[in-house]
Length: 410
Ligand code: UDP
Image 1 (tube, helix red, strand yellow):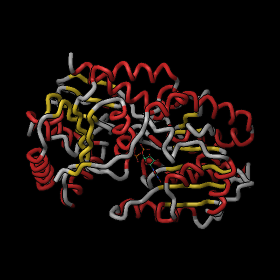
Image 2 (cartoon, rainbow, N blue to C red):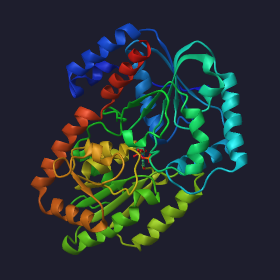
Image 3 (cartoon, rainbow, N blue to C red):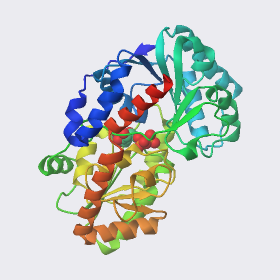
Image 4 (cartoon, rainbow, N blue to C red):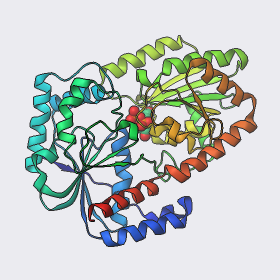
């Protein structure tokens, strides 16, 4: 029923020269007394989205420092995932709440999974709302329970959060990206820990300019002309239409400029396809706008190549939980422009390590400024990369987890 996920092997020592020995030593000291602790991560899927992205690195690293860690994907069928998709959107502010049947399905699958869950865990961590009822339903299966919330709960659909709260409030410990995302009435200890990216994953590892150029060229990008690029799902909150509008303004001053919008699509997401088609329509056949998705063979390596080669990287979101794509982009040391929302300002110091914008016009003005002054772009890019190195790489997140595990034992 609950499916264990096979993850590869990773070694903390490999990260030493990227994040510095001090942090690695701090991690080893914290890990020593926790050796052998049985830790379980519970999540809804092993593919796609930020949670699985993080766990594929975090689980091997926790093992490497001596913990006995497993990651299990909960069992669910279509009705469950339809319900949790509605729940996810509603919790981030969508007016559509779950039907009674959908709530019932969410609870029933949580019951099944709670029943199947094995015993004897030192710590069980439920990621996001999908498995969030399991603590209430089977508290005896683990000595400690943590709810790890990866979404923005600051302006939820009131009806949805009211139904969810009784389940999440009772977790003795919970973790949020930002203080603002903590809903009122959390009874237990609340920890604020933002996520992180893996600098050694194919999506983020250093790429030679030649390899980046070779790949971009294959997708029809003219590698001798400037490129603006946004990588994200095709979703209204990511504002690809606004990016196209900003590009059009820039093009009046810099006629050679091109735009790449790169985003992965799920086959079972009709709304995503509708919005993808709306984006293509908005581009109106402009040959300098390249709209690419995973059905054009754009995977992690290609995302890396586009980000490494672009002259300006954009994440013009109007709503954003954290925005892993922001750290991923800035890590490539290219100049970055992001919407001044959600987790983006945490990752960008406006004017120092990138620019924050609140409109199409601002976005266009900053992009033009960067394109006309490569020295500025270089400075922003380098400052940005150091900010990410210090705050948003996986070993920092591992350290924060170990600190929380230590507190649990007190
Ligand atoms: N992603 C990807 N290919 C794409 C678009 C997104 O691999 O075409 C990845 C992206 O690199 C990031 C994750 O999906 O790791 C998205 O996380 P983020 O927090 O940026 O946004 P979300 O999609 O969760 O709102």
